[in-house]
Length: 352
Image 1 (spheres, rainbow, N blue to C red):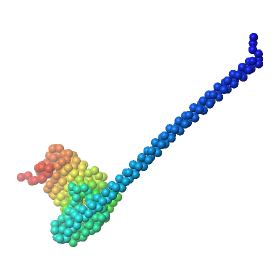
Image 2 (image 1 turned 135 degrees about the horizontal axis):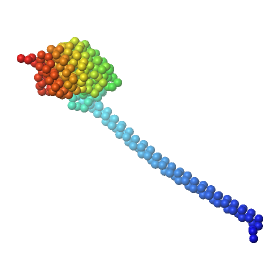
Image 3 (image 1 turned 120 degrees about the horizontal axis):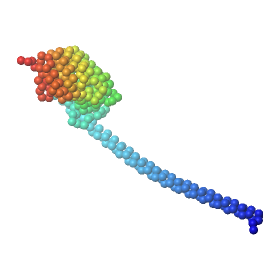
Image 4 (image 1 turned 90 degrees about the vertical axis):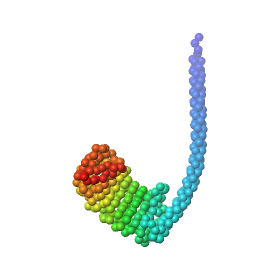
């Protein structure tokens, strides 16, 4: 017997109601799951924020501790500089007293070879003035040694004018000039060298010459001062932008007379300009270019130049990249022969 039309309608409505209830249950379940997920993420974010806050607090504490240590170290450095300033002032005062009493003929209170480098300190300027005053009043002092110290323009403007007309020998080694004022430092020194007509020997060892501009200031002042006979610029051009061969050739081709030119340990090589200047037979007794990177090609250039040179009495080429072939070429040059001696010194002698 077939169900009535009413019964079929009731069953349809029941199925729709059941389906509707099932869909509602799914929606409600999804909403609950999403809320739980949000709660979980919120809890994770809260924990992460708590960790971040903890790290920030730790960082702040560490920074405060570091700031405290930095402040303490700065105070210690300041006290140390004060102590060093006192020690240096005593050393300068001792030399000032010696000079005033007509003691030794040289000043070495600024020679700190073997010590920690002495950095610039404005507190020392007044003591530099005392030293400069003593030098200017002295009739005996002729030499000053300055080594391993930082010199600013303010110090150079005090010390260098005091040397003029008195110092016959200036020996400066391992000097530090402040970066922003390097050109000014070289200008002060060059002007003073040009005016110091008592100066006979300038030693400029291990003072890095930054560029050709700085080298030109120094070289031109030397050329202009005809009293200078010995120029020793060793270990100055290596690892810098300045051309040592160019500077040496300028001195040799200047028409000046020199007893000695020392350009040792300057990484010289490719000495075409130097050889050309040497061939002009300059008034030069001794040429030291040892400890450079000269090779056999350079030896050939020097050998050819020596055929035109009759003035050079001593040539030092030791510690170079020349082979025996290179030395033999030099030894066979000109009417003179060269005999190799210790330390690479080659001295010409007339054949008997």
